[in-house]
Length: 121
Image (cartoon, rainbow, N blue to C red; front, top):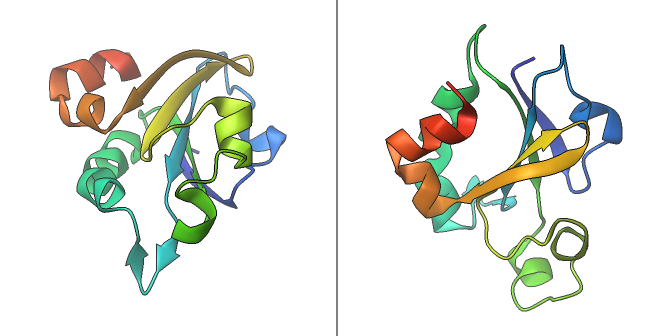
């Protein structure tokens, strides 16, 4: 796989199934509006995330977009907030057998050593 785009939230359950017993990483980004993600923090980490998940020996990552700004900002009932406890985008959740075992947000993605540990590289 390693990096796929599930598209609009919610991602399909089949896209989150573990491959070969390895974890799957669910990547939450803002929607693309006007040709770019509306969230500046998502844009800040986009290259790092793409690099971390692109290539044959890289982990499996699934990108899902949480929606437009108006449907996310100050909307406590957003389904991603309820099901996954997402408070900020970008957020990456590490899943094993469909269960969350770790998560990282922008500061953790920008910390190269910590991000490598999170990815188990």
